[in-house]
Image 1: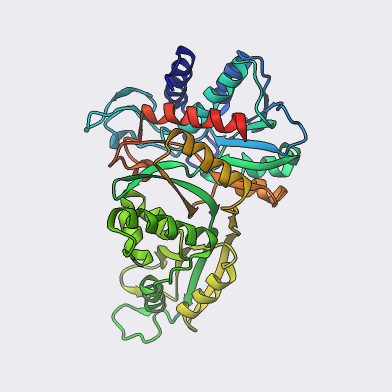
Image 2: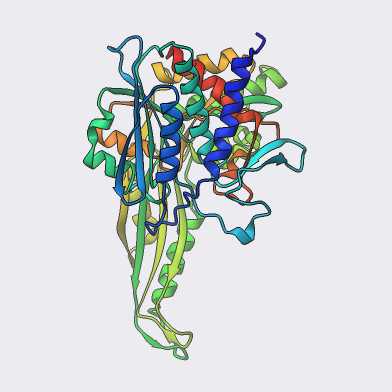
Length: 447
């Protein structure tokens, strides 16, 4: 179907909005100096242009959260919540070849026209696409099938304590009547054996952070010491680093493997069969995320011992980042105790449970249906995100909500979406938010 002038205008808005949002400095280093207010006010002004009033709530000076309600044709249906965050991780100016707050538009090394700057992928593109899609629906005089709530949080990149977590505690009514959520971190395109796929997040792994502690005997560095705390920690860390978790498909992982297997068989014949690892190897730049979505993981992130070079310290510690498949949080802890060994204690620092959305449920099925309308030859592949999003805070208030990570981006083959998350010279092809706006508008109107 040919695009009319209105479609082109709306898609161009998605690009312009992404660029403009990048120009607001919302860098968040976790020191409570981030400022989202100007960006939130700008979004509110764009919504006011189409007759929608926003509510802005500050959790602290400069830390603004925005909420908008758009009535649907059927008010009895559960509300669709679209949420995003306005803050970004910091950008070290000396590392970048472009202005991280410029929002400039120019080609990349492959000649692909891109929007450049911090937040181009995470996640001012989604904010811009969603804003453009909502404006288009409202300008047309129509209504979405169900009521839509649009929330932009502060502080996601530093744990959400001034954003989603604060709202969940102080304004839980923001999540009333919500039945489904779309937000980060899925929906982006990739390629498997030349076939376009869209990786849609169908859940998040649980996060567990630990500190390993070892006690020993302090002594002079010149003496033989058989009770060395650093050595105890080093041995424990080596066991943890060498441990390989087995793949554990579950509902999401099984569909992921089946979809990848179907692509391979279409290319190589119905007799072709590969194990999970071999299939995941074919996912290209998406491999790190796809691989981690079918197994638990440990990563050693720090080793510490307060001492000078000529003193054997009395204690040593290490930090461990653990990510558990939903429902396997206790298994993760038990395995860590085993690997740490009897001479090392395990201290729990932080724990948040994961969640899974039914890949045969209403939300995931509607996402598949919408993508098939605009890209009928593509394959939708579910995955579990290893990272955490603001959706976890919402689920604390209402655990029965269906959630999918869905930022629909169609990108050229070889473009590394994953590498742009928090990356240097972050950028997104201009055609990606245009595509995403179209998909989101269709989805919002009909879901």
